[in-house]
Amino acid sequence: MIVAVLNGPLGFFLDPFGLRFFLYGLLAAVLAVGGGAVLGPVSMLRQEAYLTQGVGQSMVAGAAIGSILGVPTMLASFAAAMGAAALVHLVGRARFAASSSAVAVVSSVLFAIGIAVISADRERGVNVSNVLFGNILGVSEADLIVLAGAVSIAVVFVLRNGRMLMLAALDEQVAHVHGVRVRALDLLRLGITSLVVAASVQVVGVSLVVVALAVPYLVVAPWTRSLGGLVGLSCAAGAGIGAIGMYLSYYADIPSGPAIVIVAGSVFVVSRFLGMVRR
Amino acid sequence: MTGTAINCVEADLGWGGRAVLRDVNLEVSAGELVMLLGASGAGKSTLLSALAGMRCVLSGSVEVAGNRSGRAGFVPQGLTGVDSPLAVEEHVALGRVTGGWRSSGTELAAARALLTQLGIGTKARDRLMELSGGQRQRAMIARALMASSSLLLCDEPTSGADMVLATEIAGVLRGLADEGCTVVVATHDHRTFTPVCDRVIGIASGAIVFDGRAQELDEYVLQTIYGATR
Image (cartoon, rainbow over all chains, first blue to last red; front, side, top):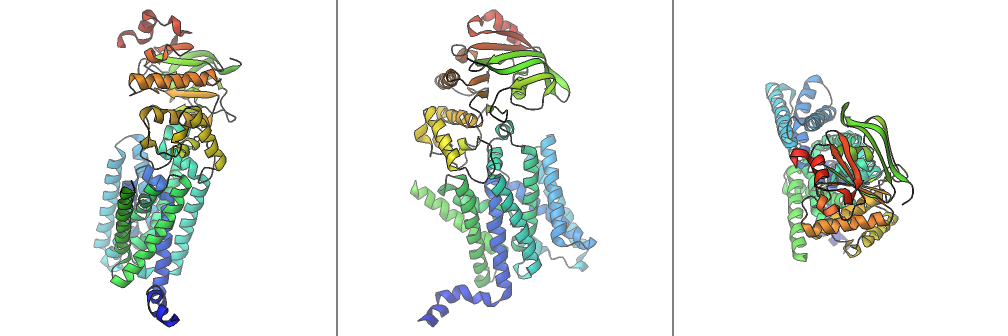
């Protein structure tokens, strides 16, 4: 009986653990999508999905230039993400251009620079596909530690400041008058978001990284009305999406990034459909 | 009415070193409902910002008796965050700025009490998008009261409201003033607020040009405040 269960349904879940890369990949996916989701509610209420996507794209330049300079990819990607986020923020604040236009210009230019550098220097072996769509096979213990560190910073940041972040997301002026240091908090949040995005690239890739922040929030939004529920359930949904995505990646033999995104999209559709049925 | 809620003495107010309002002398008693009138760009928002504690006092002094941290409650022009999934009570509870990632039971209870006081206690678990325009505005007033129950600053609170809704909002603010809350309303909608306010401050050409009772507000005064732009 026990053997039958182990060979049957349980085996489905346990078999992949025989491979170390799957265990590391699963942990990375749960950390990246589940942990990244802690920033989702505030980012999405600030309508920053496009910004997150743009910051992700900008990291291609960081990865490419980092490979030439011999700087670790994650560090270089983080620097590029921070630079892009700061540039977009400053352009938006200075009202040179609409925020969305600033994101489009900054991210496209940095993305193009990254692709150009990679194409011009193929000998260094930066794999464009891995940068764009993630490479779960390449997750090392060091990557996991860095990812766990980045996610921990994000979680602690939200646990300490979640209410103020949410008030600022709902109404910046009210938050300011009520005593929130909006600009400082916002810059800190953008920095931490960039850190999490840079650390998540190995798992989902720059072109899909926005899913980690956006979809878990969108999945749970119809089902909770409390701030605690939004944050907690987003993390749980993100962790679930990351884990299921890894199994899909393993059994369907497709890259982890697209697998996670396909699962995220499916869960989103189901959640919204059930939400409509309930109404 | 007891005590002074607002005291401005020879205050120059402005941004980036450039004065928008000069030599503001203003004393408002606790529990007064004050209407700020003036053409667009006259300086109503700058005065409101100074009272809200923003760094726009160039010289002189502006003192307000808000909550314990000296903060006022603020009702903004227009409504944001309507599409958020949060319940109304969660929106309101966020008005009290504290750390943490979720509102405590005490904060939510205080929010529900304020919603009940403003007549929408039964809507506490609804989403903002499920409320009518008047109910949403009451929720925003409740959120401001979470920050301070002694000083409420409102920037065009009837902007975009029809006559019935505007009258309803004005009535709510009058009720709060009657309970001792000092209310300052920057508005163009003097017809709605004249019947309920205690005092009118008129601003034009970078200075206070009228400071009197609502009953004194006539065509001549309005002409002085709005000039040719009216």
